Length: 310
Image 1 (cartoon, rainbow, N blue to C red):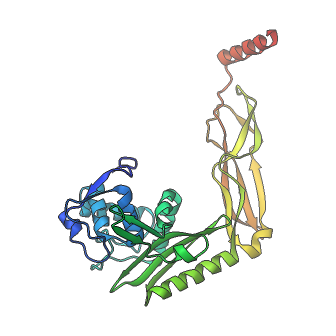
Image 2 (cartoon, rainbow, N blue to C red):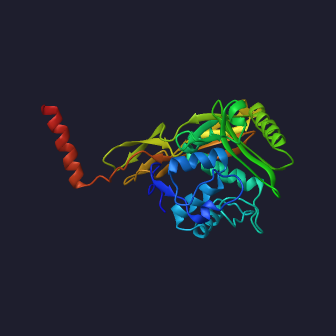
Image 3 (cartoon, rainbow, N blue to C red):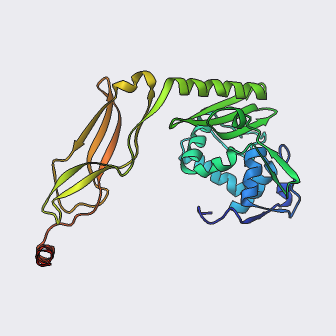
């Protein structure tokens, strides 16, 4: 299913397969329907396996096909230590992952689907006209400053696990705890990791995608100059002890020949610490500039004369 093909108000009907799931659930009955948004709340807050399977079947037609898509996506994200055997995470031979892969998956979710935090930050809610109470299994949502989620998980073999995310002062961090002997320990250890990150690192912003950082002369074009803009956000995740040592160097082409297409690379910005480049960002053309020819030269002259006569 392509992004945008379902909406939060779509109704999802529970199959007999989904209703039979074990572990955490909200006890969906066969043929019972909830909206996509209600399903997301139950999944994010209560780890509802019945809702997970119902959504998998709704999106992909079957749990098996959904798991195939999960593995394909994991591969594309570089999750080389991961193999999914089901969509809910209950113990099954060959169903494995690693803390690094969980961090990659969490980052992808937060960066490219930030609306997920509309659900992962809820502490309490309800479904079925208030008859089914929901309490977030991630206790950090209630007691950790800046917590944005993300998800707990536990089984008899995997023990207690957590992907915890938080944002403070423009810095977003993810801490992954796996195979913790108790629920309380996973939260305590996640807090230690997040506290360490916020105490020792910072995110410095030098500009945003689309910001103009200079102009470049254009030779033989319908315009004689073009704005040079950042191709992406210019920011550095860096140790606080090094933050004052960052050197920014902007290198733009002195003159470029038309034609120029919007998005063409016309320079770079580098960031260095102790003479070592730690990040490079392309600088691109802000617009398309055609090459000057007889037709557009005549048009330009006509426009100039017309403006002078007005």
